[in-house]
Length: 127
View 1 (cartoon, rainbow, N blue to C red):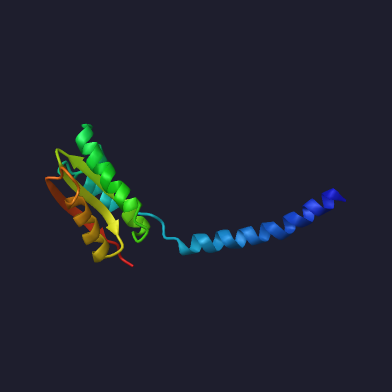
View 2 (view 1 turned 90 degrees about the vertical axis):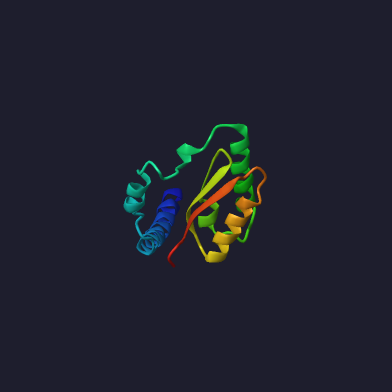
């Protein structure tokens, strides 16, 4: 009896899982960052590896990150931008949802203590 109930449950659940997975896959575009990765190989492009290890630069980056992540109005893209600080110079890179979001993040970085300059390389993500 128990075996029959388990089999019946599998026949009900399994097809619905397949449909959800198929729809989910059809809606997602595959990630293709080839061009951006090629661009980032340039020695002049700041990447997270360029983050300084001194306490001041780490604190600047952490302060900016906490402010962005703590703002519920920010998109998930904005919360995942790259923040690189070297000798008080903050580089912001990555996609954001809007011009307003870009300006808000740049102003937040400029207003952070000990920041000497902000290089805003944020990009508005296409819709």
